[in-house]
Amino acid sequence: MTAAVDPCTPLNDARAALLKAALRAFAEHGINGVSLRTVTALAGQLNQSAIRYHFGGKDGLVQAVLDDVMARLAPHQQASLAQLAEHPPGQPWTARALTELICQPFLMLFMSGPDGLNRIRFLSRLTWQEGGKGQALLVAAVQPYFLRFSPALLTLAPDQPEEAMALKMYLAVNTLIHGLADVTLLGAHPVFGLDSLRATRPDHMLDYFYRYIAGGLQG
Image (cartoon, rainbow, N blue to C red; front, side, top):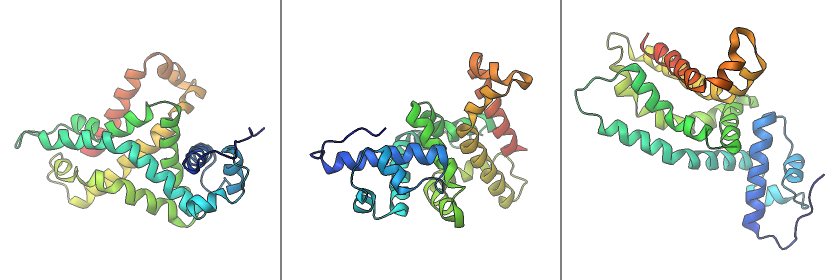
């Protein structure tokens, strides 16, 4: 049942409620699986035109959710990029150290609470959107950050062509986003003790995750 909303609610509060409802719905059901009517109801808005008023339509709503996610991610990305810039010139990177630095912003976002998990899941679900629109939005949003690491990444395997590292980086980004988005599924898989690993040794799970990505980048 949708709670009644005070008609005097400020417009910015209504917009924030719609954004939060859209984030949760898109994260759980994907972009294509959610109607504007559903988001409006989840946000407790009585005006069925509220999304069109605030965002212009579904595409505008998706872009607004993405902008909000990237704004939450930005401080963590800036911190990682600052550490990248402070790395002593000429000192070689290890694959593990570089992997941790690259992944850190997404892990911090993921660990920021239920909305953090939904934000990572939203990024993952963008890749499901029909017609490639979601994929294009995601690439445009995250690519500038990852490209800043290209020179350091190339030092990990200097004998390989740049296109090889570009492909491995693409696969690493996919593993990072989709892996974090689906990590809660481990609790449903007792095979090999994965459910207990997540519950009792999350630090080990993170270590294995980093090793997997670092191995792919360097191998």
